[in-house]
Length: 276
Image 1 (cartoon, rainbow, N blue to C red):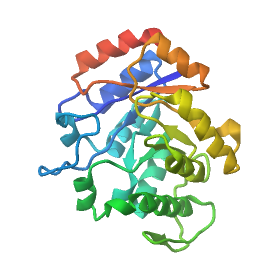
Image 2 (spheres, rainbow, N blue to C red):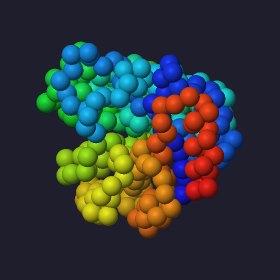
Image 3 (cartoon, one colour):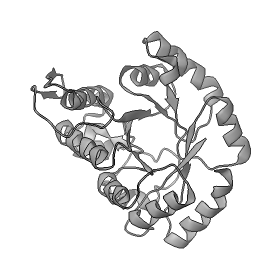
Image 4 (cartoon, one colour):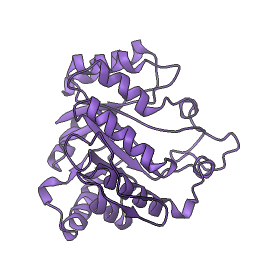
């Protein structure tokens, strides 16, 4: 099983360069970074985990800039977003950012895609909350059109693009690996089967029930059963939990690091190395 890590990198934490080097030196598989452009101070959206919103949410580094630094100082470390709030981006610009990072890193990028929870943040980007899922589907279709081998047009309700010359292309052809985040259910699983390579379940709980349902939706859509990837995300590791994931066919797990300074982060990485 491959073990990667995620962390809210901020202006107060370990730097992307130091963390990426530490992960690769210790044999970890990858680094995934979350995204929040800003947190409106007058927010009324409740924090999904309950309680007060942690300080790091309003201080998060841009994931693509931070991952570019990580790519520049590593050779094997996989890079990922966990997750990119696709509805809040111009999809033409995002397609260029994603393809460029994937190209420069030698095809090491996984694009984690999500719908978001913060209505006020989304509203500042002009996103109407009830349409965000449909907007993400359109944005993903625009990006895939730009990543296609030949100039390809797409026209949707929320985004369109003319057949265009757009390089670089994702290294593996067509798109980088795409994982969709979100809570288990038929709507999400339909989206996973429609335009992703797998699921990025936060916390990894309830997989015994949800993975068979996802596999059913996946196969119903005509997807290759062997191609589906389930990557539990933001996991606090222990031997029993990781063994359970392995029994479910999980091949990669993303561990949750605290938004801390370098000494604390390195101590945890050394401690968790026993699971590698």
